[in-house]
Figure (cartoon, rainbow, N blue to C red):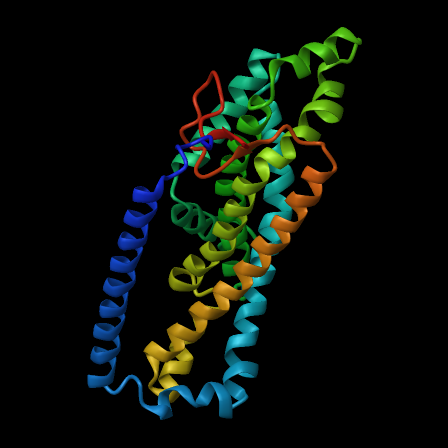
Amino acid sequence: MTSVLYDAPGPKAKARNWIYSGIFVVLFGLVLWWVLSLMGEKNQLDADKWTPFVTDSQVWTTFLIPGLLETLKAGALAMVIALPLGAALGIGRLSDHAWVRAAVSSWVEFFRAIPVLMLMLFSSALYAPQFMDVPSDTRPFWAVVTGLVLYNSAVIAEIVRAGVLSLPRGQTDAAKAIGMRKGQTMTYVLIPQAVTAMLPALVSQLVVILKDTAIGGALLGFAELLSTYRQISANYSNTIATLFVIALIYIVVNFVLTTFASQLEGRLRKSKKGTGAVLEGDVAEVDAGGAAGVGKAP
């Protein structure tokens, strides 16, 4: 029996895989023990550094929960804007009109090439009083959202383009044969089928959007989740414990997001709207003639 990527392992290969897994577990345990030992030597495992998260509700009500809400608000707004904008740009790159493809491609390549941090800094400068009348207390929020939208819409555009190009050519030919226009073909035939192929990469990008809000907290003074570690550690002298708890919160939030997306993907596949193709990972290197990173389901 074989899979798409490799032959099914035999008895010797299975035994070798178990040995490698055992070695990895042992090495991971040793590294974990070493890290915990260092933390213990520096008194980072003392109860007084961890109990505030259980005994003092102000840690949550004053710092963590407000910071999480700001992170979710900025991330959700950026997602709501970047998804349709990225879809429109991706469809624009597939236009039959050369001038549309050229204009959209220039936009996508430009903003995809600039680091999201630089886009946030430019946005913050643009929203300064001498250019725009944006209140100083909300300027970091809008700068973060703007930077996230500009960068991630360009990446999502490539995900959409690659997802559509992953479909069999016969889908487009069949639509043309029954007299459907390009817009109708894209709306009613290609996009609905490409959604399942695009979903894994789209979810990965949504997780990136949520995590990248921390950049604004580090450099623009945006009061998001990660930035709260400064106030908490200043009050309780527990920087390591605070960062650990914040990391757990990020893990839980992103796990909920990916779980929801996995359930949605399963429902879409059961509805038989997809082709079985799956687009995963970074699509930044998609070539002009096809969809790099597109695989097929077994």
